[in-house]
Image (tube, rainbow, N blue to C red; front, side):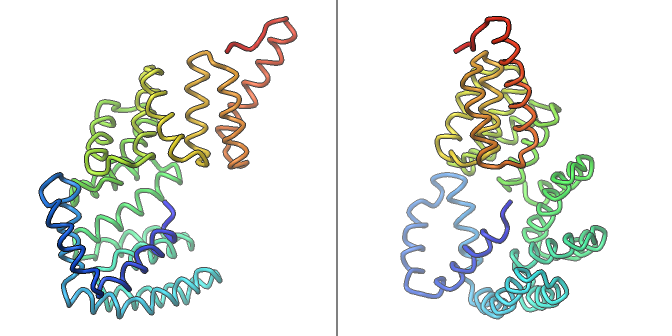
Length: 290
């Protein structure tokens, strides 16, 4: 959910879209067109972005977005909001501008205003992305009821939004609710984007919540190998090892999670509990199971 990093990558794409690389993109995309759902969806997006009118709008918005990024880095929320509103005015289809504007409003605790703003977006794809930002924020605030409602709105507008499918499915898995639905959503997300470690982890967490720890281990280990510096993934792997009775491995993974993110409360709590149990076992003359 690192919006700024995603936005920087998209800005770079905006600068190169008018070059000779367009020809290469068209040829390559046409070759893979219809080979799978992901390629088809990507091609539809490329065609929209390559329209002259879209390019012109995007280029006009870039200056506002760059200045807004600087204002955000200085925590000048008033200036950032002003610039982002200008960006959405000149380019109403600009997802980055809308997402950043929502973030700026949320930094000022203006939740209702952000929701009302999103409701006015005309482009359904853009609205879906803006709603997704709101849903993710609601989830992070632990307002699960609100998050569920907004994720449902996102998927109604954009049923193939892989990030929404995954995030909604993962939230349900975390809550231990509607696990069959959660699995179906995450598997659909994986069909669209099969190489996402976060999605592998989400599916593993569904299995974890079902008590199918060996299946969970398969998916989460795969995710950790791809992203070893992700504290959440290391925490999940530690919890799976714990459930499998591999306490030494569990302690190792939980320590890694805390090392990566010392503020990870769940990993800290689990590690403290597990280490305390091991001390008690040592006092009784027992050894760590491996």
